[in-house]
Image (cartoon, rainbow over all chains, first blue to last red; front, side, top):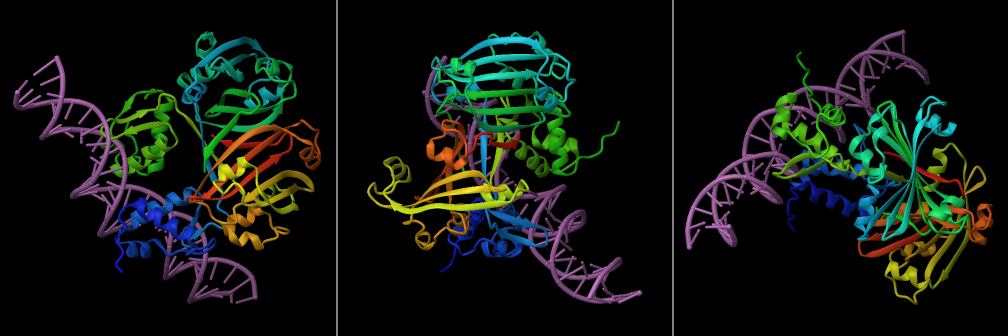
Length: 233
Length: 233
DNA sequence: AATGATTTTATGTATGTACATAATAACCCT
DNA sequence: AGGGTTATTATGTACATACATAAAATCATT
């Protein structure tokens, strides 16, 4: 029983995955080193390395120099969420996108906002409120603070035709940020905009982005009851 | 002004990222090909390839054979969520983990469950309900259906000491799955378990995992009001 | 036995070369 | 001009080799 050589890294990855799922290599087990696997599979060590590195990135393997590679005891599921521009999200569902700017004003943000954005507590910031629509139904409410010290061009943008969501991505790239998902009860304003009952369970996304050490924008997206954020594992 | 050679792929990645961010290369722009960049940076093409590939994986670059590499027009933010075992999640917060099995029974699942798990509509499945605690406070309610045709060993496991959440990861690896996040209003049972008001906004995670074509388990995790799922961008 | 220096080893990565692949560009023929 | 074939080109990957690095294991020293 001769086995065909596994010459490309995808085949090696698949074979390793198969062995793990077949429990030939069990959680916690040390698997053979790259050199041995390369010899067994009939390929170069770099090929095995690429395959194992990819599997380690997905959390299926734990790798440490010298210690070797072992099957993860508790494979931490890593779900990659795509967070697209809302217009694309709606259009991707085959629906017609709509946008309404509800408010654009200058205001001193709550301490919690200036604190997390590390801006002077008393400085005014650009504040926006908008409604995103899918097939003329409310899709999401966007509440946003923009740090115009970081993005001065935003001062001249009315955000009437294009949402800040989209404008900022094209005009103010960010280096990093964080995002949080949670549930919240609808207050009166949100209930009216999303045409749901006061107190209804809304899906909320909070995002804060940075340009190096300077905050760019803090946004809260509020979705009506029933909204789901899905992804593959 | 002589520039130091960028010899490792991380440096190349950082320099490319810097140029994009400095708008030297703007969204939509075609950037130099790998050979030219390698010459400029004084490294091998494989090094540039690794750097650009990594950036493409994060969505910052769009790459196509022959067409070249360009800066993404709408960099779709890719957030990688780690979905650990709940015990680890709690312990990672520095809290003491607790677990209570509330119910373990055999039942014919609702059509929606057997439908999505592709099991015979009238077949009984193992059904579990459990409570996860952090510092003796309710952390999450787990409602789970297990396909014992796929995981027969689960029939002999009482799930009194170890949660199905943890047991399944060690005993029934999955090949793929999907996960959905949403918000839901607390019903009476949930409100009692999570000690919150009926109708309160709960954060809900629904997960369905597969071992190739066979469903493994379908689980709903319900978190009390205020719970956040956070990650870096 | 405890401590510190040294060796060993598995992974991590850089390089040059070679070839594969996909998609565009160029060409040719009618 | 249109349509189909071929050439070109940028990315994608395989491989052999070399060296870097981290961490475990061993040995030496006190």
